[in-house]
Amino acid sequence: MSTKKIVLFTSLSLTAFSAFAQEDAEQMVVTANRFPQPVSTVLAPMDVVDRDQIDQWQAKSLTDVLNRLPGVDISQSGGRGQSASIHVRGTNARHVLMLIDGIRVPISGIIGEADFNQIPISLVQRVEYIRGPRSAVYGSEAIGGVINIITNADKDGAKIEAGLGSHHYQLYDGSVRQTVGNSTALTAAGAFEDTRGFNIQPSSTYAPDSDKDGFRSKSLWAGIDQTFSEQFSGFLRAYGYGNDAEYDGSYGDERQVYSRNYDTGLRFREGDFSSQLIASYQKYKDYNYDSRKGLYKDGTTLDDMSQRNLQWGNTYRLDRGEVSAGIDWRQEKLESSDNYISDNYKRDNTGVYLTGQKAFGDFTFEAAARSDKNEEFGWHETWQTAAAWEFIPAYRFTLSYGTGFVAPTLGQMYGSERYNIATNKNLKPEESRQWEVGFEGDTGPLNWRLAAYRNKITNMIGYESDPVTWEGGYFNIESVTIKGVEWTGSFTTGALDHRITLEYLDPRRDTDHEFLARRSKNKAKYQIDWNIFGLDMDVSYQYYGKRYNNNTNEYANEQRRLSSYSTVDFSAAYPVTDHLTVRGKIANLFDKEYETTYNYESAGREFYLTASYVF
Image 1: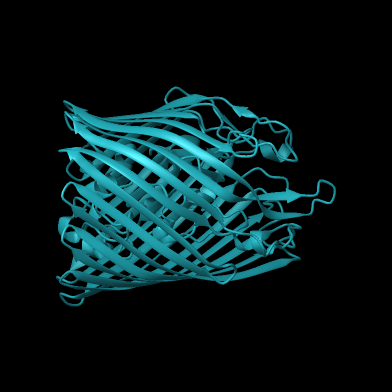
Image 2: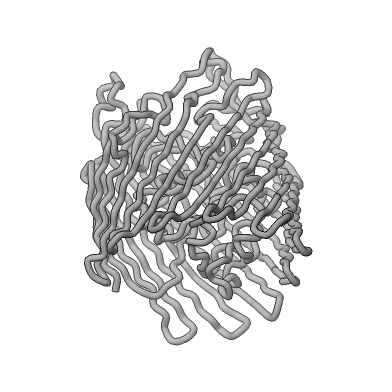
């Protein structure tokens, strides 16, 4: 059974127009083009994971969810809460746009990677994931794809859950959603997660690294949706989390993250026209310090990030099509400091976009164009187009082309006094051009899709420094070419639901044809679910082929190879009563030893047991 058929696509105000996806709730998505459309009409490869699947898989982190999806490589420096990077279809981690409820995740620091491993899984109600360029729809970062994390629940009810597991893992969470009258929906949720972790660097000779590296998280979510009339409705929501992660490092060993998010929106619909205005404020504080000295002592660093967003979008429904246009405004402020030096940055970006899709007989056409005005490097235009031909019933051929870009981060452009990074105001955005051809269809019980793509990325930003003085900066130093083929298929045999992903990837630097680091050349993923006598079971197999930990540079003369590996996860759930469900999971069933980042251990075999009660 395909992902398109088994997921539920409903939520209020997921992105700029999600409120208007309600009338065909089981087949609508909004992330692809920022207007509601049946998932079968999306011309790019797309996967959606809902909360029922997350519970069935018993995912303990967003990383657990993303690892199951096609095109994903994740490199992680240890266990829960540790530094992690995601590569989609061979692109860099900063080439993936991460959204929460359609709003861009704040990105602190200099490198420019979204810190997805800090987002509590308890906040995640659904994940919409689209592969391929989407800068013409969203602007910067959407070169490899877009991951939209939906936090809003869409069904009335209440639930409490408690769990325990390996490494002294414990989880407690609860949520409630209640409709009051015919016009008001109230939602509240909270969660606590804690684990002592394990020693992520057992081979380190540095004595402080011999301890266990734990993680603790507290999260809260509250919201109200209000219908004022047949034409007008709105929402107000607030959510946040506070995390504490222990890690191994020479200058610090503990990290505290505090995230606060406040969103509000007003929606209007009249006939075929709909409009929505969203305003949001996000605050993100990231402390790193030596636990032996304390949070506010010498050696503590702080990235204090704030982000303001305004999104106004309008959609007009056509016969067998949609047209959408809007404006996005974003302001980023970052103060990066230690006890002696502080670097302060500020930047505004305004983007205008136009997207549309129209079907003519057996053909469907799609196009998008966008222009972003950044106060630091001026205007930047992107566009994309796609066409699909259903040449026989249930079989479709697609062809697409799209451009994308990634803006330099504030630290890359303006340097950092703390890290001896020089200013480079001439730094240009990274740019991409991707072609993709795809075939898909339903062959008997098998729903499948085959795609081949080629992505050329230029003006790649890299760091260069003087090996004597250690002074350096960021420059546009290289280009890369990424080629890939992926096949996904799903089918049902009796009580068993199967999903298979096979991938081949060839990402290389143009200068020396060197294979890019942290990407597997070959991947295979197989998932099987079934229900027998009320017992829900899930088995997930994942294979990652050889890859390299690094690329050669001025400090490394050769690439360090990481071994291929495969893992198997098994989970089962049994409804003891109509309200009480007990779940158990064994992660890494065969206790495979592997590394996704050199010298950082994986967790090994882990056990989990949870119980949830639904009111």
